[in-house]
Amino acid sequence: MKFKRTGRQCFIWSINAPHTHASPAPLNCYTVALYGLAILLQQTKKLFFD
Image (cartoon, rainbow, N blue to C red; front, side, top):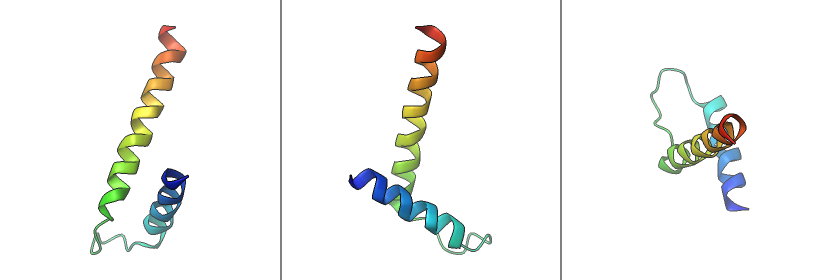
């Protein structure tokens, strides 16, 4: 699954990235992060409001 592979790459990037923010995150990492957040929010909502 492409999403998982991208997520892993971004996770590795976030560990390897210098904390000086010198190297910006690959754009698809932001997309993956937002997508993951949306799924998390949806599941949380289901948990509390279903």
